[in-house]
Image (cartoon, rainbow, N blue to C red; front, side, top):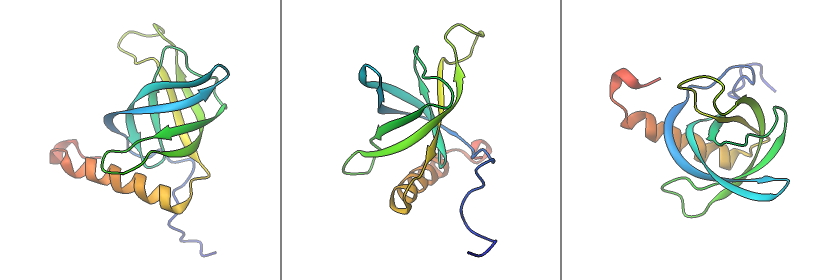
Length: 125
């Protein structure tokens, strides 16, 4: 495999775009539906009062606008904002996508790029 691979650096955080979309994920008590409040090519942030612990693998079901059907992804919780921990902080959890196949990664990247192009130039990341 060439060293100049197009795969993103797992340690680098992709620029996130603020956008609300429904997301379902499995917890010990079943599937929960919450809102993702931002998304990037590498993950999303889910607004929830009951975040899962950091390191938890989670099965996500996401419906992107402009796509016919929802699709499932696996993610790992990388950061948690506890409810009422700090003023002006959205409670929830950051989830990094893991083991994403090329077709799903392409759909996510295309969606994020469409969002980025819709932003005024000064707000693009």
